[in-house]
Image 1 (cartoon, rainbow, N blue to C red):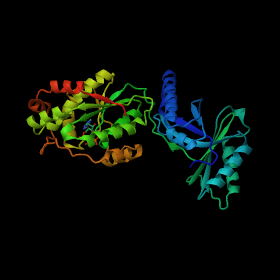
Image 2: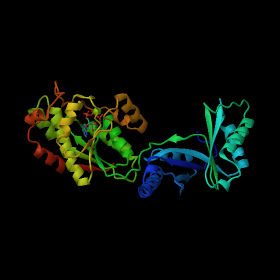
Image 3: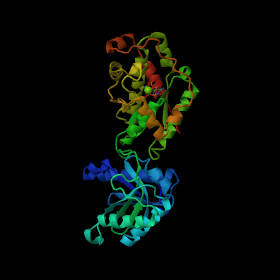
Image 4: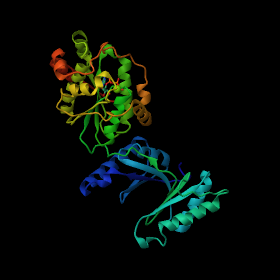
Length: 388
Ligand code: ATP
Ligand code: MG
């Protein structure tokens, strides 16, 4: 909950702290740039202060700023806070006001941290907890304290020149700042899985080049619309990184495989996609391919079949959802906002054979696979870039 009168957002980041000094500085700079871009893209004005690896945002729109921070990769949590004087009297007063305003039900606790030199304040963090707790106690009609299992925690962060009071740590995505890794080509189908997979690698700092295959007669306009919508949603997490959707024409390849290949058709189709993706990656200086596949989710995703599809490209194929259950994927898709996009109705999959191979070998697939080179080149040449 945002305490009434909050004027500041306290921002925390994680993984960056374990890097060497130089890497850490670069990562912090990237995070700062990304956070500014995120605030701008949401129309949130404010002042971003970067002090002692504890960034804070001064703004009139603390809620929107907190949300923006919590959508920025690299940020672990953010708190809308009230700033006040770093004195015991001021802290006690703010705590009592906040407790009265938010209506505390059940036991509470105060958790305080003091930063800065020892002599900066004539009290310790334990003093803040004790005296602050007393101030809250006095302000409530039916106070109760439970330090082990409180239903409401009041946080105090006392720094050299200023103190902050807040009541929640809203979770951010964590991970690393976007752009601190080389890009990856993400195969984006508009289904539930692939946008989640793309988001997961973005979370680790890799910008993605989204690539959609348009199977034309087998997919249809609604299918494309679904991919565009999920790309739009993902772009919200990358306001200062290019996110144009690449659409590769793949109707001809699908036709060719429909007429010539039976049991291993889907595997050859996937191998076709990876070959096109590899060429797109070369053009974009991307260093890998991302898919939303998970072991055993579909016949084309058995362990054996994944080995067969991978063998067609020299690039690593990253599958962040490899071990995820569908329910976990759906939960994440809801959390990041792509689930609704994939729920748009589409024409069904008309390419899959009746009896798909589940345990293919590379030899078997290569034997029944027509020469796709010309179709791959054609798809690469015909790939369009759509601004979202
Ligand atoms: P999703 O996995 O996105 O929910 P899906 O499960 O229907 O869709 P599959 O047919 O299982 O997709 O394909 C597995 C992966 O291959 C997808 O996660 C995606 O990365 C990629 N893929 C499938 N179809 C396309 C397409 N038309 N364009 C781009 N990538 C695709
Ligand atoms: Mg899938």
